Amino acid sequence: MIRTVRKCGIFSACTSSMIFFSALLASQGAQAHGYLEVPPSRALACQKGLNTNCGGAQYEPQSVGETFKGFPAGVGGAPLQGPVDGKIASGGASLFSALDAQSASRWYQSEIKDRNIDFQWRYTAVHPATKHEYFITRNGWNPNAALTRASFESTPFCTVDGGNQKPVSGARHSCVLPDDKAGPHIVLAIWTVGDTDAAFYNVADVNILAETALPGGWSAVGSIAPATRLLVGDKVKARAFSAEGESPAYSVEISIDSAEDGAPENWGFKLAEKINATHSLVRAGVRDESGNVEPAKGTNSLYAQKDSGVTRFEVQLQMVEDAGARLAVSSQQAEYVLDKGRVRMDFGALSNRKMNVEATLFDASNKPVGVTTALLDGSTMLAMDVRSNPGVHTLTLVGTTADGRTTRQDTQSVNLTGEGLGIEHDFVFPQGIDQYTAGTKVLQAKTNEVFECKPFPASGYCKQYSPTAAGFEPGVGEHSHMAWDKL
Image 1 (tube, helix red, strand yellow):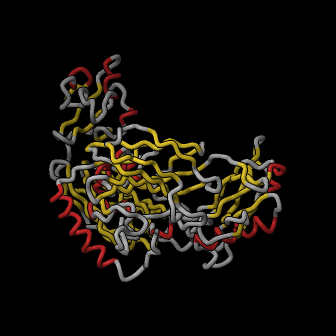
Image 2 (spheres, helix red, strand yellow):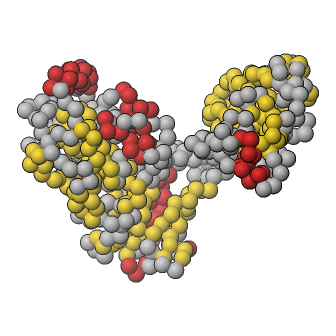
Image 3 (cartoon, rainbow, N blue to C red):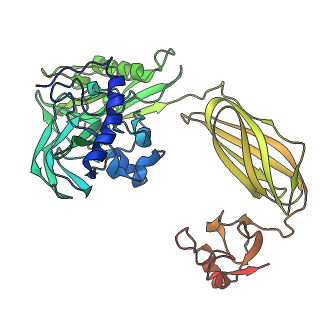
């Protein structure tokens, strides 16, 4: 019997239990490790480079999610087992806490085009399995809220009996995704270990594109998964498509008329409501057990009747510029003194919005001699490594708001004095490598020397470089002499 999990009064107990659990595993000598390989777990997608800013998960996806067995409730009368709400993706391990960040656009989503799906695990240290279970998020779940038990259906849609035998890497667990699941969802895959108190919990981010005919003649044709906060004056359009192309007659648009409208859950709800008020052959919302579809303040699925001809929807944002956004160089020195052509240039930058900023220093011939990037939110000191010669330079600061709607720029003059490089160059290696031709001069920052690309046909080697194949790197690679002349 599955107990109802209380949402309060248990977390401190769970935390202390986690400490005890670590000691318990050590005493049992547990070395079981593994991860969901197909579709890739969130952690494996980090290791593959599909996800970024993952913390320690990208280095050891096989260790992610190891904690007590018994999800979603407890065993033996315990009030709660498995990972704590809010830490389901990490399993409660601080090394993997970056995985607990949750938003509609945060993680790579594997496209699922067939409801008959084969899950596969990879085991790096295998122990017997009592079972593998697969849970999925509820219809209307909020993709911008921390994952909790309430985010998922209370029972698994697929269970594979492990027979307390050691599972085999790559073995297929043939399952069928529920017919009413469409669009972005999260699958929680659980490997329950047979000879310890542990289980491994892996989340996989998926976008279910598989078509299916639902009761009443409805087919799933997409979803509304709002993530971006919008401003007054923005518009959102649900664009309908048939097999022949866009179907304007079934497309629906709303405007953001207030700050309240701009909250993701509110504009998603508003768009779903308008679709339902406008069309009878298309519905947006969450489908209940009786087949009724009603809008929700979260993810809304889109359904269409065959007579509409609609096969899919795309949600398009039309965002106005943020007129109040500001960006400026806020402080700098009167001059920066070069030492053998180098200087660390510190300066201040100020923005009143969160912005991705790139600062570039250009010399008198408009050649970039220094660059730095940062995520700016308020007043920040930036630092740039510069290699150049004395003279007046131009500092250009370009920032784009985090939502991508607005770009701002500021330009200031900068005076460099002191000792220059002595030899002019076109690039600091490997910047601009696709532009290297015979006669191109590059500064090798590792040795502070300038090299010139040899004439054709040797000039072709000047572009042959990657961090793992650096044989032609000027002055450093073992074949440098074949491509470059030192000046």
